[in-house]
Picture 1 (cartoon, rainbow, N blue to C red):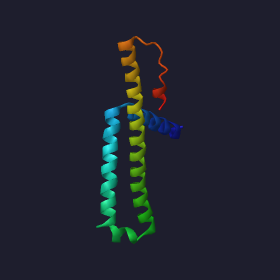
Picture 2: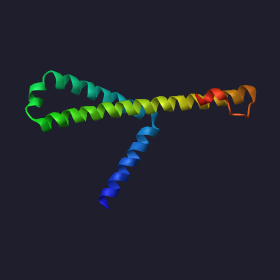
Picture 3: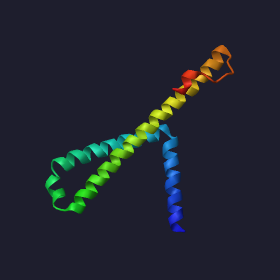
Picture 4: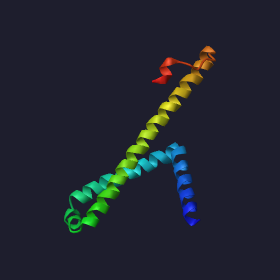
Length: 110
């Protein structure tokens, strides 16, 4: 039962992160900075230490890859969110200016 509570908490946390634009962008920034720092540190000062153990090497670069992939996914979600907001705003302005009730603009499907 405890495992289900943990999964529910993680799902709720992810929904909250995706819903709040400022929080999402802040998380993207920190994940990107973390991935960049890990890449620089792993390539230069920590290279010898990482190559001593295959497990350490895989774990370190796995976390770095996870940061990078998560950053890319959050950035893609943010781009889609911005596009969705722009379409909504365009429709609202069209209704406000022209009094259109028809929301079927072929350009909105791009």
